[in-house]
Image (cartoon, rainbow, N blue to C red; front, side, top):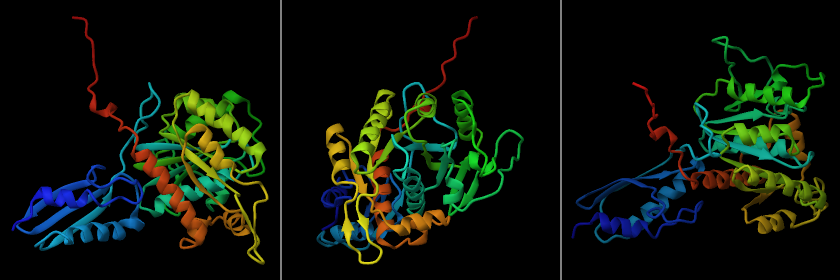
Amino acid sequence: MSITVEDVKAALSKVVDPNTGKDFVSGKAVKNLKVDGNAVSLDIELGYPAKSQFAAIRASVATALQALPGVGAIEVGVASKVISHTVQRGLKLMPNVKNIIAVASGKGGVGKSTTAVNLALALAAEGASVGVLDADIYGPSQPMMLGVSGKPVTKDGKTMEPLENYGLQVSSIGFMIDPDEPMVWRGPMVTQALQQLLEQTNWRDLDYLIVDMPPGTGDIQLTLSQKVPVTGAVIVTTPQDIALLDARKGLKMFEKVGIPILGIVENMSTHICSNCGHAEEIFGSGGGAKMCADFGVEFLGALPLTMAIRQQTDSGKPTVVAEPDGPVAAIYKDIARKIAVQVAEKAKDMTSKFPSIVIKND
């Protein structure tokens, strides 16, 4: 008895993608399905980077197909294909940047920059092409966190090349000023500097550009919200009530300007003693999850307060590259995958499909 395409699809409809919770058929991930006698070949195309999970996904699909009576050779390919998704109404995508993700907090000191750089590194580790824009003009920290120094170079006199480390493309005002030089600039100068960093950096085919936002809800946040095509925002907070108060304001600001909230990360959730391993919730507990319930957004995950995270970031080698197989890096990677899945499930950007309409007066 020969196997049919319908038999294969029926089997695959019972295999659930562990990252999206959808089966591969309804999730439209099955591509290039071919049945030749009793031999079956197909590709699973994920809309998010997940290189570390390819083998497990391939095995789960193969196991389901092996249960088909009389099946012969099975060939399963797994790959990721990240595409551009919708942004705020009236804005066009940037060239060479598919998706821009803002990592924000209403309050300083909650570990937003540390979270941003580790999420960027986690997406890169999963196979994505990733850039980091350090939008904190007053207090740029990404050069130190990524162990990058030097001045950007220009090849055409109009744009500057991003600096690189650990597979990330990076742009920051910190590359252009003395580390001890204070940025005594008013709002208009700051917003202009941000736009120049964003638009005049020669980003090269990025799947994701992670924007490390300054704290607060001021000029830079509004400029980014109104003039930069942002796919979605991630809010970083601690469980502390005062941090949550400001985080709520940041979330509402993005909602008002039409930028979807991809989720909330609770940083410094639990303190782990480096001597005895005792866990203590010194900033309170459950605040991030409660905020998610209040606003109907996803709780992406909670990160511990450990000395290692601080030491690794200060030394220019963040946790995801310092201990790629460690438990904290695993949390960052899990959060990064959840963010990428949220982006993948948004509507596709179709502006490039529409022809330009030109009206001529004859």
